[in-house]
Amino acid sequence: MKSISKYIILLALVFTTGAVFGQSVRDLRFNEILIKNTDNFDDEYGRHVPWVEIYNTAYNSVNLAGCFLTDDTTGFAAAGKKGGEIPSHWYHIPKTDVKTNMPQRSYIVFYLDAEPLYGTFHANFDPRTSQTSYIALISADGKDLIDLMHYPKQDLMDSTRSFGLEKDGITGHAHFLDQFTPGSSNEVKFTVSKQERLKTDDPYGIGLAIISMSVVFTALILIFFMLKLFGYSSKKIAQRNAAKNAPAATAMAATAKSGGDTNKEEDTDQLTGEEAAAIAMALHLHFNSMHDEESEVITIDMPSAHYSPWAQKGLVMKRTPRIRK
Image 1 (cartoon, one colour):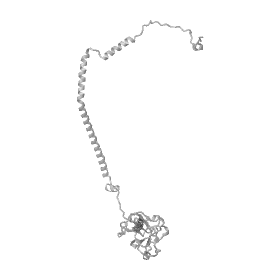
Image 2 (cartoon, rainbow, N blue to C red; image 1 turned 90 degrees about the vertical axis):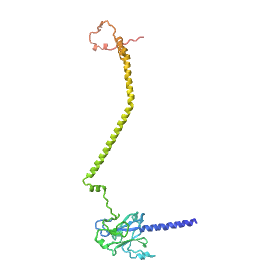
Image 3 (tube, rainbow, N blue to C red; image 1 turned 180 degrees about the vertical axis):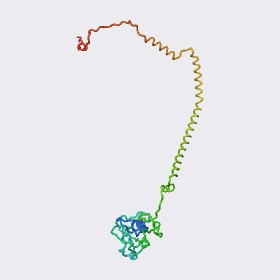
Image 4 (spheres, rainbow, N blue to C red; image 1 turned 45 degrees about the vertical axis):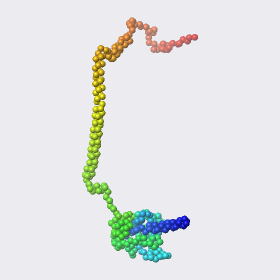
């Protein structure tokens, strides 16, 4: 029983995956087309040729490889039947190019130049020589018409403007666009930057100067009041501390004054320390700094040589020491 349940779940997943894939392909829409391309958008070879833009409206990636592009749906009914053949005039998108995998909400451009040998994104038909005025996208099996866009061919042949949807992927609102936007959104929104808006509103910069000066002076005024408040608080704290310490200081001063007067009266008849030190120093100098008495007699020894002995080497040399045995 469990094995049968597993097979049923597996088959359900397979069919669900196929349905999701099919629905993803069906989310592709023609978004914009340009026939008279004179000087605006060129291909990888630098040529100005007609082009068409396809938009992926899904929120998942879609690979359109294997699908068909055509401007002639003749044979579509026959191709949809069992065993039906795909018409040869349909352009078969190659399956070997990874660029055909479209990310979510993205755009892809095909060149309608009837030159399929030029690359994957060059179709085999040209709307300028086509007998119809539409373009179709058909599924890989040839049975489903994914999308079809009708366009005013003659007007597009005479105008250099593109024709497309007003809002990306929303059919039924196609018209000539003011801006051609190959590979990007048709909803062109012109936004004005703050610098440009300021330049328009204040061309001479007077408003900007006033705002700048206001900000600077406001900041300076706030700093001034903060410093003023800080100074006032510091002054109050200092006065409070001085008031607390005033009684003790007054008492100490009074005590010192009264004590000094008493000692002065008591020590009137006694020597002070400075006086005693001066007397002691005088006595010390008196007893220890006196010289001995001398006879005042000068004795002069006459030299043994009455000439300068500078040239007598023998007088300069030391005496030979005597060796005692």
